Structures are given as C-alpha cells and as structure tokens.
Image (cartoon, rainbow, N blue to C red; front, side, top):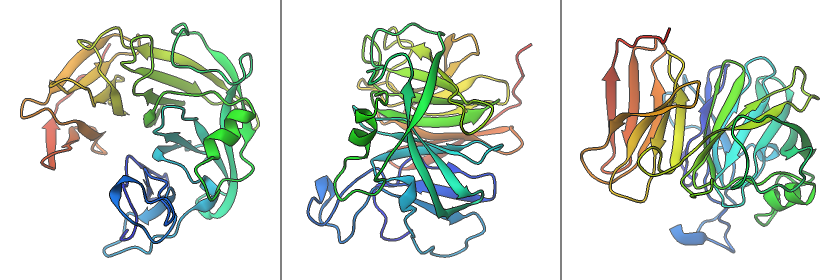
Length: 297
C-alpha cells in the first residue's frame, strides 16, 4: 500500500480481503502535521489476503473521504460500517451497489437518532436504553475539503466523541467513543441493525467509564470467543491495559502493558480462538497470548 498515509484500524471483509483506512485528510494544499503530500488522503483501500507483493492503492472514494479509523461488515447484508476519529465524528455505513465489489460504488450514509436530531452523544445519556435510528445520505462522499461529517450533521446525524475501534459479533456492532462520557474517559456503543437495509435499527450506550481505574480511553476492541469484549486502552496516564467487558457491562483488567506507557492496539483472536494477538505501539512489538479460554456459563 505504498503511497497511503497514517493507515489505522481497518477491518476484514467476509470475502477474503482487508480494508485499510487512512486516518488523515491531508491534501497538497493542506498537508497536515506529517509533511507534504501529492494527492488527497482520507480513503479506504482494499488489500487481498492472498497478495504476496505490493498492492496498487486504489481509493474507494464512494465509501467517503474522512479521518477514518475502522470498518466492520455485516456478513448477511455486506453493508460496511465505519468509524471516524474526530471529536465531532459521525458513525457511517456504506451500502455497496454490488456485494463483494466495493469498487463498484454505493451510497454513504450517517446514523441519526430519530427522537433527537443532531444529538451530541458525549454526555447525559442513559445506559442500555435503545434509541431508534435512521440513516441520512451523504450527498458528496469525496469533497475537496474535510466536510463529510458536516454534511451528515446538517441532516440530523448524531455526533460521537472520537469513534475508533469497531467490531461485529452476534448480530451487533460495538464501537468505542474514546473520550466520550461524563468524565470524558470513554464510552462503548452497541448498534443493532434492522432486518433489512432500509430499516434503521437501534443504538444504545453499552458502557461508560466511571473512572481511570476501570477504563481509560478505549480504542481498538474485539469480541472474545467466550462472549466478552476485549478493549485496548490509549490512556493519558502511564498505565495502558486490555480491559475485558462482560455482556452485562462489568469491566475487569485482562492484561496491562508493564513495559512502558505506550498504547496497545490491534487486538484480535486467531481463527480457532486459541490465540490473542495484540500490538504495542512503540517500540513496535506484537504479542501472542495463548488460552485455553473458558466460555462463561
């Protein structure tokens, strides 16, 4: 993927590829903090798992141009859900024209809470209360300036405080709002799609941090084989952990970074569920943690 920039969380597809996500909207006119660029950035790119050499980075422009973090795909509908790492981010979905062929284009939409247009979800919302949603279209998914989120908000889309990690499990999508919540220490949201692509579905606040000792800036996350979420912290203090979250919303420390104060990222399980992999941001290390794990009764 030579030529792409600040590739972040991304996500896998059900048909054997990886979607790489640029967490920057740099342009030649506005290069940002990482130096000059020759092209627009802020796109998603598809990489075949079978690739054994460089892949031509073709931007999937219909999926939107924004400061993208991660994607997850509904295996039933092939709708692509996407997060955006901004303080005023939206939660997006992309409905492809052709399943398994994202390059063929489609429609980009943003989540709107029906009962509360333009809702700022950062504070004041109850846990475990489902809100009905609808999806508003993004007229220009590839603007010259970084305005995709403004387009959605003007149509009533809800704002999230730095939506980052995203995973699909058991018919639901879980995503983090890294600095959301009353104490600005993080939230985890659960979106459940409707039965059809035209149905809105529901969203609810699954977890909100009550203090740094339990959860501090949740970032990447995945669903464990035993039914708990495993979430990476990217906190502001000197301790970063993997935090487990039960289906009832109880939090526990699964592991901690005892080497330095850097964030853990990219948590995932092997296909057989026996090995947990996680990266250490600096000095650039990958750890493997073996089970056996025991499913909760």
